[in-house]
Image (cartoon, rainbow, N blue to C red; front, side):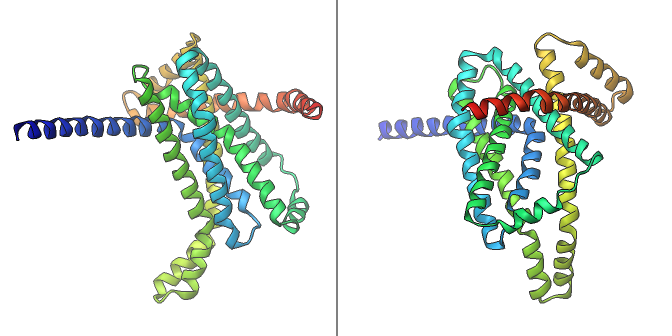
Length: 316
């Protein structure tokens, strides 16, 4: 009997260790994935446009297809690459993060540039709406998954860089996998709510038993266009801010310390011990750097990188 009790004690102890390990993995995953907030917000802001123009019954299936592709990107393709980098080439993480930072700065600055220099895409949008069929749906899903791959690569790299170096390999793998699942569920769950919010609002306005319910439904329908515009603005600002912050921090980690130290000194001087003010000043200065870098990259991408990419694509 004493042997059985001892065995049960051992099992309980193992269970406690396992539970603590699971808690540690989830905790590390949540903490590290929070560093990728800018890319996550942009992912949520970008995706709703891929279901624009489709019938209401196709919206959720399209979101689900993109979410599955996003999980495949993160867990099947990017997770092994991230683990290989962590194990064999940790020195490459920061240069890769800088590439991601350049991408975020460029994408954010390009959106700002388009707002300042608008073009009329109305006719093009009408043509696309006339072409809505199974082929166009497949094309849009593939395009969304390609865009997600770039953002997911940035998210996984940021998450990897935020994990403590002393973590064992298995915990790094588990934390990255958990972070990938958490972020995907959060992003595409939010996207699903966003794209169906107007339908829910219409149902509440038409079928609500209480006057308050009907008014709330009408408010949702009327407010969604403004909410989507706000989401795009927040996503763009987040891209520019996070892109600039990545560049500054990556340069610091690679030995180029003046930009980081200058921003830190200015924030400390302005904030005078107020943590919130220091964070706001730091984020603002990171955003200025991100916008400046992104604006410089627009002609480089348009006149150099895009033609080269097109040349290689035609040869392939």
